[in-house]
Length: 441
Image (cartoon, rainbow, N blue to C red; front, side):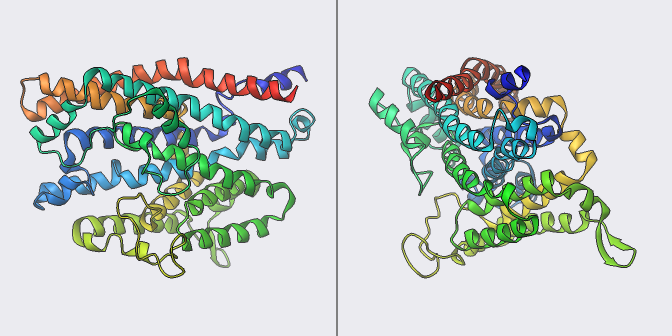
């Protein structure tokens, strides 16, 4: 019993069972993709689909090949959508396991699990965000902001922005604070504009959508499985219609529920029954879902880019009209159908294929997945500072300079992420537990 109590009160460096390491590994793979995206949008923006340089560059064969690889390996939409869906896939697991285990329930009830998760999550995210934003502001105040603009002009880079300048401590605090309050136009925040790469808004969406998961997951122990599946599908369709990120989040929760409570993997490996003893391998429809999303991405990128945002009009204009979503902001990141299909097909394959799970559960991916937040918060700063400064100081050919910057930035990011993880992220976990235990006394 003492062991169980110690586990319940220890900082959640790994709050999931080892059987779900492949999900953490998939998050690590997305983290690598985010590094590739940030690095390439700075040093080779024409190789990044949907960037301003890519759309303004003549469509040569090489250009089309780079766009194709960009869609697969460093796609901004899949990266941020993937983090949102994976967060929803993992956040409910501790609650689901506690609800199933009568032994642990005597020490850590489902109610206490929910309350603790909701309370601790804000501290565990706010502290690293606030400190990384402070580091970014301090570094740019020391180096100056002009060199980013000079680099962009000298290299013809139309795809990066000079980070917004935060002038005092109060603006810094307000910028970090509002990251956990904004519910619309997530990317139009001073914190996100002030952070290199302008992708800090993703943490805002992940945090806000966690409350959708918390409110929905409480029904899992008390409703029938078939009702939960039908209800989740209805929820996903409704959230899609109003263009809410909740259709990604509830998809992640449904996957977690099916894998944990419904023997989804065993049933999927059996196949889909067509007639008597004839079964269709489940990976066939899963691969079709994945391929349909990738084909849409490729068509909008290389063939008809003018149709790329047409799907967004088909939603309800929730916040400004009772009609269709005809006045959407093209500069805002969107919950898109093509990204969803790619991620859904990928997740279904990952959840049901032993070989894929084995590959994703390797030490490197899992370790990187556990440090995904720290890596994300450090590699952006390193690329925009050390990377750009190193590039401008090298007197080598363009491609050689990029190659040197890539290896230096990646190695420095690995070291920096490990330091940030041990010095900032882990202590923030411990602090969240200490404060929660203090208010319970």
